[in-house]
Amino acid sequence: MTTTVTTRPAVSVAGLRKTFGTKTVLDDIDLTVTEGTVFALLGPNGAGKTTMVRILATLLPADGGSVRVAGHDLARDPDGVRASIGLTGQFAAVDRLLTVQENLRLMASLHRLGKSAGAHRVDELIERFDLAESAKKPVSLLSGGQQRRLDLAMTLVGSPRLIFLDEPTTGLDPRSRHTMWQIVRGLVADGVTVFLTTQYLDEADELADRIAVLDHGRIVVEGTPDELKRRIPGGHLLLRFADPAAHRAAATVLDVTQKDDDALTLQVASDGGVTSLRAALAALERAGIEPADLTIHTPDLDDVFFAFTGAGLEEKR
Amino acid sequence: MTTLANTITDSRTMFQRQLLHLRRYPSLTIMLIGLPVIFLLLFVYVFGGTLGAGLGGGRSEYVNYLAPGILLFTIAGAVAGTAISIAMDMTEGIVDRFRSMAIARASLLTGHVLGSLVQIFIALFFVLGIALLIGFRPNATPLEWLATIGVLLATSFALTWLAVALGMAADSVETASNTPMFLSLLPFLGSGFVPTETMPAGLRQFAEYQPFTPVIETLRGLLLGTGIGNSAWITLGWCAAISALSYIWAKRRYNQKAAK
Image (cartoon, rainbow over all chains, first blue to last red; front, side, top):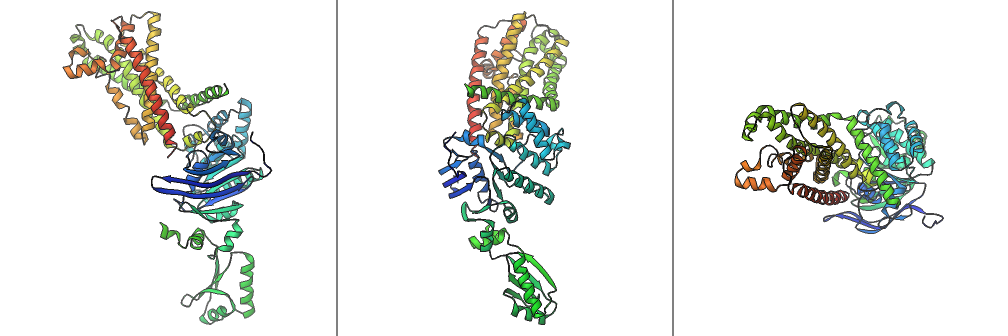
């Protein structure tokens, strides 16, 4: 065992660089993930999220910088890292020719759990991930959500203390997405550290203790979800009025950021929370104005990029 | 020593995985048996009369001449299955999972090789059985049978590692199913179907010196009592060289692919 320090970060990265040919994919990355927390790496396609995960999971060598994962130096002791982590990649890492149960047993054998302990662990995971009905089915017959659950279950066979989830909900229907979120929350409750990548701000917001926004291989901003949202101006309330008089009157009592005289709409800055909504409605009430329609626009990834890189996603693509 | 014990445990796990694949998908094995059987029947019943006459006998002489070459043809065809299954693993996410686990690195390759050897021997068993049914009459002693199995094993081992390397070098499953095809041609360009003496000069030299000819000659000698000469040693030399080079190539490709 390595020397134990009272607060040991699960992941610490300093000055990490990675280039493919002449293209710099990761440029001087620093980050720290505290044990027992969820860290979300947020960014659009091609930002370098997957490369980051592949490096941390020992699949790719870094070109520079120092990385410690689960207390092991990545460059000097990759097997130490491998023994402590679990990886669920972007594409289902399952054996499609085997059944659900056989896939999990394969993992148990590779973790050298021993026959009875392995069988016990497999049954437990089948139960926990709601795969009992399909346990004897070949993986090729499972739905996308089931495959993703199996994929994650396989990652957990060895009871890793740190798991990497590369875009765990991309391509899943809303229901499977929520199931996956529940599973991640359950893992954290058990003390597991989760490092996840996502393209969805709401997902990072739901799950993460800290979010880092990755763009063009650089971390443009890092903080708690609340810190980030406070700094994103994209959230607003959109109010539509029935007649120009009400529209004009409302504009005088609200803190309007944008006014559209043709559509009779007003935009009011908001973090999407109840407080700002109540304040706006109270101001209208006092003035005796009833809005015809109200929508809440919460900041999305596009807003994050407008805020921190000065360019929207569309322009980048 | 624990490293060695782990390597053995992991390789056995990967081998069991391949055995499950074999059981779950017997169609591939059946296909690997089918092709050499078709060639055997085709050559014996369609060309056998004429080719046997050319050897100074008839169809029954030709069955004996052909059978050792067909066994090698079976191996050469069966290793395409190895290349395909390696390429399937490499192009799907599962290999990343294996590589991010603290398991013996080469165990995946070892598992594939051992699984393929089982598959090849199942195929050899059936092809040999059919050859015996249609008149193949070997006169080998038990010891010679044992040596035959040894030569088949050494050859299968070498060609399987070569197929692992080819499967690893392929970018797609389709490529992996095509690249080992030249191996199936080699028994034709050797002494597998007709004696090399009947070939024109350039081809004859190639046929005499390519690795499949000494293998066929050794098998023929062991099974039918024809002269082996130094073919056995040349066979073992080729097998050792092909195994070693392919192993190095396959392992290097395996580690390089990690860097993509």
